[in-house]
Image (cartoon, rainbow, N blue to C red):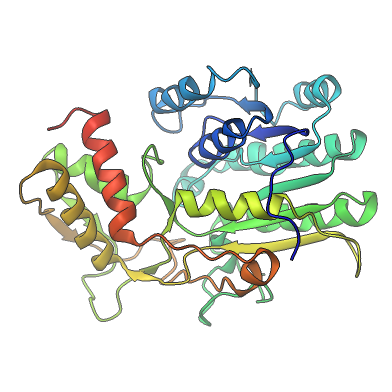
Length: 343
């Protein structure tokens, strides 16, 4: 196992810095005195005010520089690398969301393929110590074997979002092989927490509750074969990323490129998660909260279970996520009630 510490003498470029994971990761680097260049296009896929709130917490750091820009803009990316010469690049900018990729495929090709290609080209022309990039648990598609292991066959994606993420892994491997760019892909499993993404189910359910609307649960009301999800709290994601970032792959066998699952390794039934969210909101509000539930068939592109094997991550950097959904959801519920003033 290598080092677990962040090198504060390096310059870090974080794309998607106003995004959920990008914000927390940038803040972690800044808290340790690192120089961080943050890029974000602040698009309106979800509430821009929330992105601005995150950004407002990064701006006071003297070692933070924000660039409003899109990774699909190759000139902008090349200029940024030319000016700041980052040592480590963390690419978290992407068009997220499985269901949205069915309605609006163009933005996924722009951001997730062309944007990522631009990052790879920049790393080729301005060599970096390490490229860390976001992949997704969705690359496992409708795989039946659980837990999902990094060595599993992942050539059957069931959404365009998933296929763009699988493409990122292939592209990174190629650039790693051709230009000796140390690269690490992260397959995230349902990340949640305060200041999270409003398009995620737990956030949407909470919004619906306060709007007096029912929540839709896409599991056919089948509680025996409920959807399983590996919910991973944001702090665990950041810690895993921090350790992996400090340990770039070496070109021992083939390209210096690796892919890791970052998940909780303890999948929860969706209904258990919803129950924990009701309890967390009840605690935050001091009254009983129960969602009005409507059950519908599973949506195209959704998978019945996401379940990460984290053995590879543990062997590489000695880390395994620890936060229970009860603790994580309580932190989310407390933040939500405070931020939206819904007491």
